Amino acid sequence: MILSPSLLSADFGNLQNVLKDLEKSGIDWVHWDVMDGNFVPNITFGQHVIKMLRKSSNLYFDTHLMIENPERYIADFADAGVNMLTIHAESTRHIQRTLAEIRRHKMHAGIALNPATPLSTLEYILDDIDMVLLMSVNPGFGGQSFIPATYEKIRNLKNMLGDRKCHIQIDGGVNPENTKALTEAGADVLVSGSAFFAHPPFDKRHAQFQAAVAQ
Image 1 (cartoon, one colour):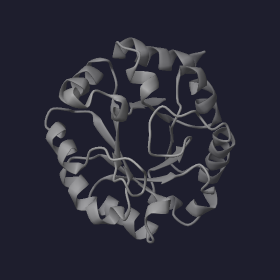
Image 2: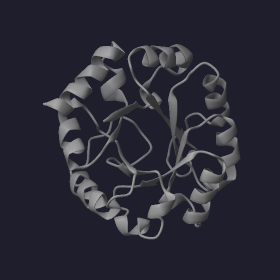
Image 3: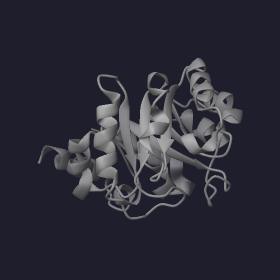
């Protein structure tokens, strides 16, 4: 299981040191929630902040775009040093073309689905993606409660993917208490914001998530 802490819940005034501390704690991925105030009712950081912090971090930058028409910014996020660029299926008219463009810019391509978006949306793009992000809360704000129907959606997605090498990521309400059930259902990348950053030190909290899988 890969834990990808969401910087949405980190200290925005101290992100450089936060990234260094995450590396020291054994974390490999970090989750960037990019919001534009249109696709979701919130605004966070963008490609310029990510580019500046890329210079001081070797972490895998897992970047989740909650923005309208993300195809406009693919080159910018590639230039910023993003490793995985995830777009929402609901945010663009031309999903396959946008995913292909992400890969053309040498990034891994992810597709995110809101809680009410059916898996059938993915039917004809399964070979164009490296990760599916299932939102287990409605996107836009941290600290929301996990939606239980996500478990069935994970299991159905796992069956849909078959033997494809594709990550299943869960974002929203993830904590050590539901980590085992999520991984047993088929998820292998978990995003945790407040449930991670509100419980320092990072190395011990990371260990708690990993221990939950082994129970």
